[in-house]
Length: 133
Image 1: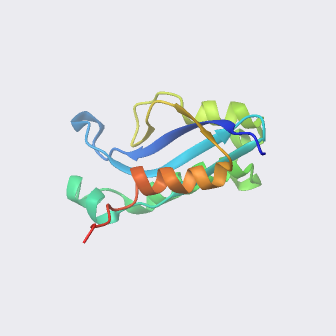
Image 2: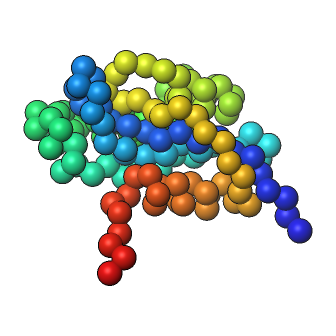
């Protein structure tokens, strides 16, 4: 029987006006140290973000969210942070900051497959709530 894996995750938030402390959950970063899995998924609800700030620079937001995905993948276009060891990339991405893109505190969980856990967390924390009708 396969063992459960310990993983860490953080929700990616877009806070268009930091001083108001309002945000939209836009994605999730998941890290499983033992398996070397680091992945991010994004699904920004632009209408919700524009409701918080109709003047938000959507192109910049999408560029920064894409950079998170590239850093997780270790892609060359992710810049020097993408070349760090996996765990260092996760900690860099989830470090406290006062900017338009922030993350929740890091949480832990157990899963069989980190990719499936990422999909579950995205459904629960980021994607629109589905009606039960």
